[in-house]
Amino acid sequence: MVLTCSCCWVQAFERIAGPNTERNLETCGILAGQIYRGELYTTHLIIPKQTSTSDTCSTECEEELVMYQHARSLTTLGWVHTHPTQTCFMSSVDLHTHLGYQVMLDEAVAIVLAPRYGELGVYRLTHPPGLPFIAQCREPGAFHPHPDHLELYVSAQAGGKVHDVGHVVFVDQPVHIKDLRAL
Image 1 (cartoon, rainbow, N blue to C red):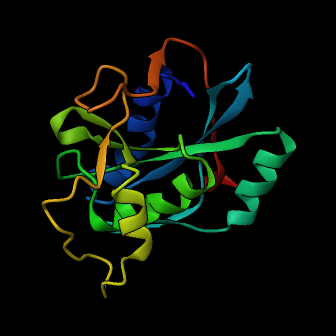
Image 2 (cartoon, helix red, strand yellow):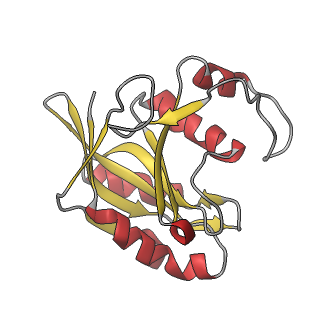
């Protein structure tokens, strides 16, 4: 299934994340939208209340996020977060975080924005081996190594370097941005 994603939210998210980026803190957001005629459309970027470090970002008060989405009949299509000082890639924390999204919706994406390098990465777990491997991973600690010989994730962007065609297409369409941190 194609996931159509507005490119309009990228600059807005970078601006919203700016104060955290300057303090070397990650910022995360939720990509939400609707299914229409067999395609997924990202219509909302929601910034939840969150706790951030230089290498992690965790949502808080998730009931507010659920209520906001439910009131608008929105489906979670993925998530986005910044790497304030690093390039685009999926850390072990990112892989384990994304597992929950992709188990619920196979087309869900993890988008990484690296403002310092001007990079945007759109990723998903491979299936197999990525999704089942991460689901069974019991390595201790948040950050831990995974085998280099396994391709655990790939670019999901159409035209990306993947073995199959990526399913995410960026288009110029409006998107609603809601910052729940202000509530």
